[in-house]
Length: 522
Ligand SMILES: Nc1nc2c(c(=O)[nH]1)N[C@H]1C(S)=C(S)[C@@H](COP(=O)(O)O)O[C@H]1N2
Ligand SMILES: [Mo]
Image (cartoon, rainbow, N blue to C red; front, side, top):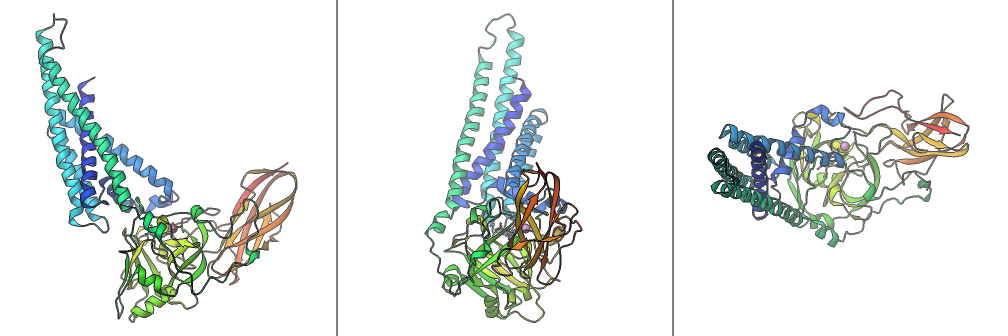
């Protein structure tokens, strides 16, 4: 192989050893200070405002795998370049390796919840990485000089590769192979250990939630139409959309979790998980929606949330005059700015939730505690893994997405979706049930209408409402005739407002327009 290939490999093995040593040391120091994930989170936080919009929702689950893969490629390419540079212009390869590691150190130490100790794994990783890179180049250099020398001297000899050159070659290859293999095995092992050490799935499984003192109003049997392909009125947790900026799902131990209410309050309040469970809990069915939901999109779901009214906690804390916002913060640094009056509204079940559909919150949906606020998009209200609520003002503070171009206030827009038939479906002529969901959280859905082609709007049959905080299923029986047709839907809410036909993208405050599908009937 050519020398440049070997040089590139030295860089890659050195980078692998940085990451592996950091993982191993992290197991002893701070299981959550993995440099690769920290850099990924830094990339997410520094992403320019347009990015989330462009990729529809960068922070959906699949996009995170993509981000980590891209990051992996960047590391490999950067490491190979460092290896080449170390051969051609030493010590600049080492400089590149140190610079990359320095970025990782910044990332791990600026992570929410990081301490000075969090830098240790990456710093030790970097020192070992530099040692590996320099040692490999020393051996590679020796091998190559010997080989050049022996070739010149022994051109007539058949055994050109015997003698010192072969020895140096073997020493280089053994070092390269061992360092690479040990890094891969130890790195993967330590990563798995660190993830396991942090995991709270056992604590979650052992948890028994109290029953609600105030149970949910009950789900009327007529709320569920039970049609094929129609979204069930209560979304199973496993099917519930997930959106967040967390590259690694935060693992919070309920035994050490606490929530602080600070800022513009007369009494600062701190509450533990046990304190919270001992309070009279209420259950409320609430539909949660993401502002990134496109017209017809699936970033919406309804669940039965069990929790304690945030309003009652605020009563204890006693907000002072002039406060108009609560900035809630998650353990991983995400923040949401929610209007104080919404959280204090005696007519609205804004919950500090511990349960979802009769079970503890799934870890990816905010275990052990999250916020759920009827009527507001998730980015301004639904903080998962919540650990702090700061009573403040909109003039003084901003939630995570506000400086990234999203509206500071995020009331949910009245909207509707066709679930069945599917877009571009081929249908047989005759009776077809057109059905879907419509929502206007905290206002309530009053009417849903469907239009076939350019016909008149026909009123759909509404399923019973659970409450104004939840979506409603609807259905319209259609006698489908052969040909291509378009089907559109629009909802009117209890305030009398009918959805606008004007199409708007999700940014900055939620999409608008009628969900319209095409079907082919034969
Ligand atoms: N800690 C944290 N909480 C968060 C977010 C986040 O990025 N981090 N995203 C919010 C957004 S944008 C939405 S739409 C909801 C989604 O909640 P879900 O994932 O349980 O559906 O969570 C909100 N809470
Ligand atoms: Mo969202």
